[in-house]
Image (cartoon, rainbow, N blue to C red):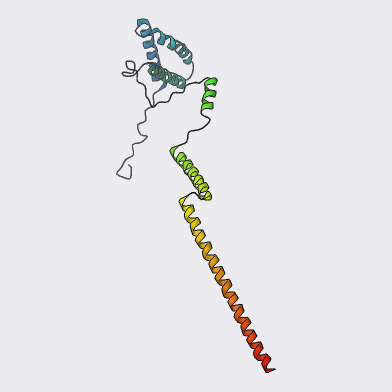
Length: 197
């Protein structure tokens, strides 16, 4: 008895088909195929495709049952591939999203490569390039002094130069006045000292 209240049923009832049953199924399939061939209901082209497989099955009797399994599976797959399911054979449906690989000639490839030498850019890349070009153009115009900002900067620079020149003149004047004041003082002290001696 299992310990818990939940019982695991995995692996209990495994059923393996025995080789005799597999051989019987293969023989029945072969008989059906022969009956269809004799009856003539199926198209002769399908039967001609299946005939080499049937002769291969006669040889497979000597081989193991696993080989016969794989052959029967491959045959059933080939039958389903040949027949159309549902309304597939009545209506041709083309999926527009499906990409079909088309072979191109070398001359077409060379032409397409020549035409596609300049790759198309995405929107973001184009915007980035335009932004860079506009920035370079603006810098060029700014250096030439043709933009409003450059004119304002130049006017500001002219005012600052003028202010600095005036400040330099004032400093020179003050320096000269100090030197004159020192000279006058020294002359006065000399006179005062010269009178005493």
